[in-house]
Amino acid sequence: MPHEEILLGLKDYEIKNIEGRHQVIVSVRYTGLIQCPHCQGERLRIKHSFVRRVRHADIGVRHCWLELESHKFNCHTCGRYFNQRFPGILPRRRNTEAFRREVYLKHLDGIDRQTLAHRERIAPATVERWFHNFLERAVSERQDAPCPRVLGIDEHFFSRKKGFATTFCDLEHHRVYDVTLGRSEAALEPYLQRLKGREQVRVVCMDLSDTYRSIIQKYFPNALIVADRFHVIRLINHQFLNLWRLLDPSGSRNRGLLNLMRRHYHNLKAEQAQRLTAYLQTMPALKIIYDFKQRLTNLLLLKHRTARQCRQLIPSWLEHLRELAYSAFPQLAQLGRTLSSWSEEIVRMWRFTKNNGITEGFHTKMEMISRRAFGFRNFDNYRLRVRVMCA
Ligand SMILES: [Zn+2]
Image (cartoon, rainbow, N blue to C red; front, side, top):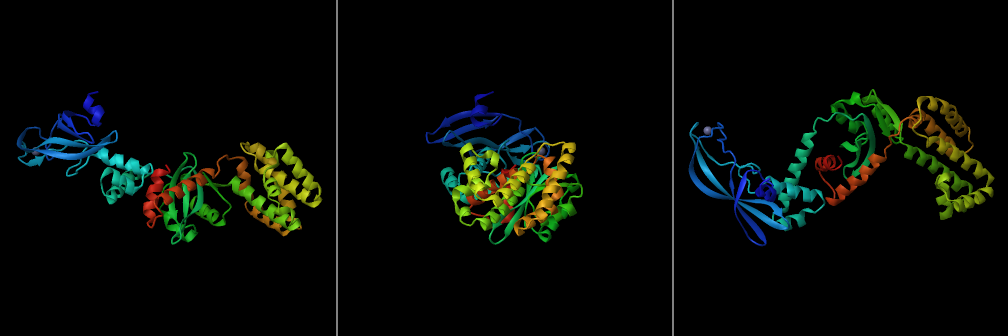
């Protein structure tokens, strides 16, 4: 590879001269083929010569300018005049594509607009404009991406003025498929009607939200809904802890005990398990409920089961639901009603391993994107960034 190509990252240029200490000025001559932009003719006559100065990507930490030896040509074939074009530099631009790309990447990596503009000696609005152009280019490359086969759906907060947004996540390939404003059926309807390839979606993972469930059933006819394990277990724990507060108000204020009660028993260390057992022995009624909760959560923690194994587990699951339904405590009866209404979706958790943890992870990243820009007023700008940076 010629030295010119290594140093400048541009093909077919010959370096005539390099000078400058803090800023590097490289005089170059284009050695590639020159054609008429109108008729692709190669029979040309130099009419006039001049030097074109453009900003190029930095060399190390030093700013770099290219001084291009360029000509105005007259084409013998079509008789028209034109200024010489250079690969890697668009007409009338005062900077190379490599430099624009460098600014885009630096901003993407988190250098804020003001600092970057100051460091590169360009205007902050220019940074923003270039960044936006590159994002749009990146998104347009996968404009017609079909709906993912395994979809995760969840809501997240966007802004106080515009409220919540819904995330559609491709759980198979670990990327955000899209985000759209709103979380109610009325708000999502126009978006979903336009969505292409809805019938390709086979599995949808979600928390226990009735709105989302009815939307999915309506718009994704071939999809099976699977409940998200984390949310189901959190719900069980929540109702259980509420009941505990009712049964033993003073004990439930103990932070240490609270920590032990909300964790899975099999995750406790030996001494922690001992402490919890000692406490539960003083509360026989609570112990029965605690044991029941443990059995229930252990049942729901199962995964990677075959269809046959799942069928064998179902009687046990129904037995738990029945016990909840006949419970004297309203908290447990309520829990029983919720779990029964989501029974099918929950039982599918044994079969499918995907969960919405990936979507939740992306929500953290989106929050970071939003915070770095000091919030967004325009949802489309936010969506553009999310689609590029969470892919
Ligand atoms: Zn021509």
